[in-house]
Length: 341
Image 1: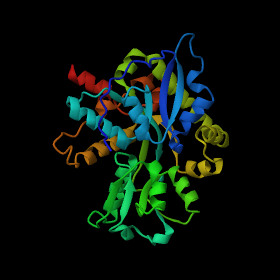
Image 2 (image 1 turned 60 degrees about the vertical axis):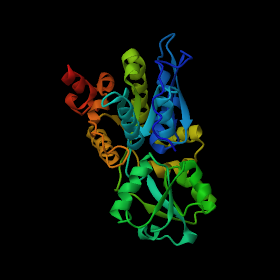
Image 3 (image 1 turned 45 degrees about the horizontal axis):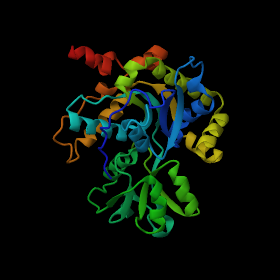
């Protein structure tokens, strides 16, 4: 799978100038996106003639991010791993600091959403039992980085594990057909596997080994040309998260209706989530950690590790909710612009 074809031109708005597109996924971390969409929060008090904001569903944050990078969406939500990969890819093509991709804030946080799952019949009962096995993983996603932490912690780096790159949507079928013995899966894709194997599975959690930030991204030129649209999106997220906090069951029902998931399953996943729109130290540290990890890849070990602050744009969020921006200016895009003057 080619991860680094990220350089298609991105129009300021879609060809249909009456629509702005947000690319999201069915992951529970994206619940605010679907609540805001279903409740019309992104288009609340939309000025006459202003573009409507619509949400589109994709299988993963990686796919959603590709929509933004290919010019098929104006906003996308993704974890820090595919975000860092996009930035590294752009740097590799155009030189350090040349990417126009920016992070507007973190929408959600979780450290309990990723697992290694195997059919119970294979008697994989501990991480050490994965030695010599074929493990499915979607390269370039949060599960890829999560596996790196998991395998290092359990001493699997030299255990002969064969990693098979495949979309997460294909792992259930691959496990049933014996193409892989285990898969690195995140919610809600584990539900498909549970159903197909009648819950006869072994789960090896990555709990506490990896914290996932769910990031809202756009292009810097879009922010400069359409600040009112960016602020409308941010207000929609803040209101949606307030609604989740106030009426959890209704919010999950909205998410379920949008993504086709079961309310009870989503409720169990939601227990592991922290929703809050912010530009904070967690975003900075997690993105920086991803860059350091990517610097160990043969494709990138010749590159300098980028400064994550080059891509953290908190100015728009500060206009909407100043208390949500807790990073100092010098660690955000505005500070780096001032430094370069």
